[in-house]
Length: 116
Image 1 (cartoon, rainbow, N blue to C red):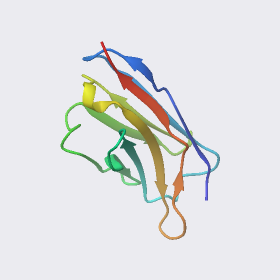
Image 2: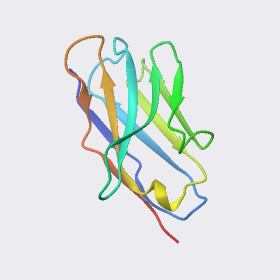
Image 3: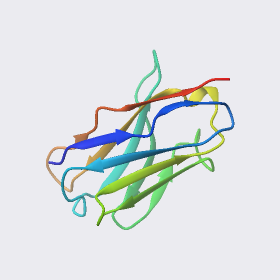
Image 4: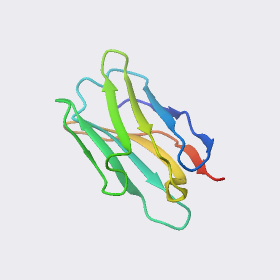
C-alpha cells in the first residue's frame, strides 16, 4: 500500500484552471486504477475521474470535456487538469489508488475553491 499526497489546490475564479497533482510514496505501476474523487460541503463523495494502467479514462458527466486525468507510473504521479472551473467544482479533491487486490490508498485531500 502506498501513501498518496495531493497538491495544487487553491482559489480560482470561474472559468479558470487548476492542475492537481498526486504523488505516491512507492510504485503505482501495479495499481489497476488511479482515481480522483471530490467532496463538497454537505454532499457525498463523488468520483470525478479514473485512469487505468492501460491508459483508459472515464469521467463523471459533470466534468466531462473539462477535466483531464493522467498518470506517469515511472514518476509515481497522477494529475488532474481542471479547466473552465465552475462554482460547483468547489470541493476537497482526493487521490485514490486501486490495487488489483488488497487495500486501496487515499491521500488527505486538497481544497479547491472556485469564487469570483
